[in-house]
Amino acid sequence: MVDFEVVELAETDHPEEGDTAPDFTRPLVNDEYWEDAALSEVTAEGPTLLVFYTMDGAFPGTYIWNEIRDRAWEEDHDLRVVGCSISTPYEHETLIEERDIDFRLFSDPAATVADEYDVAHDLDGMTGVREHRPAVFLLDSDRTVEYAWVASEWPDFPDYDAVEAAIEAL
Image (cartoon, rainbow, N blue to C red; front, side):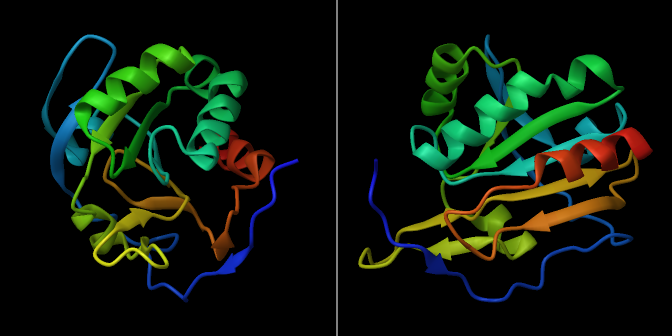
C-alpha cells in the first residue's frame, strides 16, 4: 500500500452552478494531433464535462481517467469529455495511448487556466511548481455550469455517481 499524507487545500472561488465558465484557448490534444482550440468551440458541440487533474502519469490523474473511461459517459450520452492539466501535448499523447482513452486534453503548463477557475495548487517544497487540483465542471453549450466539484484535500476524487446523475439530468 502506498503511504502518503493527506493535505488540506485552501478554499477556492471556483465557478459554481449557474455561473458561466471562463473561456480559454490552449492546445487541445487527441490521439492523432493537437491544435489550439477554445473551450467555447468544444461546448458549442453540446454538453461538456471539463475535468481538471494533476498531471499525466500521477496516480490521481490515472485513477480519474481510468474511472471516466470505464463509465463511458460520452458513449451513453450526448456529452464531450475534455481534460486539462499542466502536462505538455507530448505527455498528453502518451497518456491517451497508454490509458487507451478517447478524450481530448487541454495543455496548460503555466496553470493559467487553473488560475481562471481558481483550481491551481502550489506543490509543497517546490518553488514555482503548481498543478491543477482535481475538479469537474459539467457545462452546457453556453458554458453555464450545471454541476461543479472541486477537491478540498489532496488526494481527493469526484463522487462519480453524483457526476453521472448530473449528466443524466441534462
